[in-house]
Length: 176
Image (tube, rainbow, N blue to C red; front, side, top):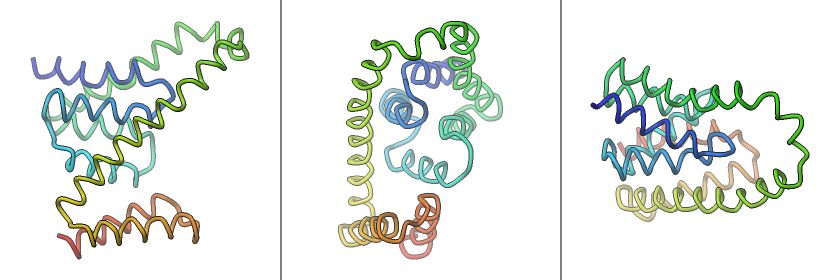
């Protein structure tokens, strides 16, 4: 039963998550944290931060880690299959139609409509992570990390993975 839950927890967000990794993250969080309770928001945020610091698609890294935590090696395999299967099926079934529809005004309009929805989902997720950081680290540490990250990203143009990595090191030594 647990393996079936793992499968559905990763299959449904990947079916509904139009646009790749970022739209899938809030949907995965809703399943993993809110629906099944396998993690809390802080744990999910830590896994997401670590996953963002590593190369490769975020959805497969989250699936592998969370699947392993919940169901061992078999859970990781099931979660990875559930993550990859929707895209594989779409590629096989829709490949013949992609060139025909890619310039269609309806597809372009759908893409424009989905973008603000994804932005709101990611904003909500960011606020939840900020609230969790505020509660566990305090306002001064959270404000310092937010300001330092903003300056590193915007002024010094540091790669986001390096900022996440430095934040993890800071957290391990100063907050840990």
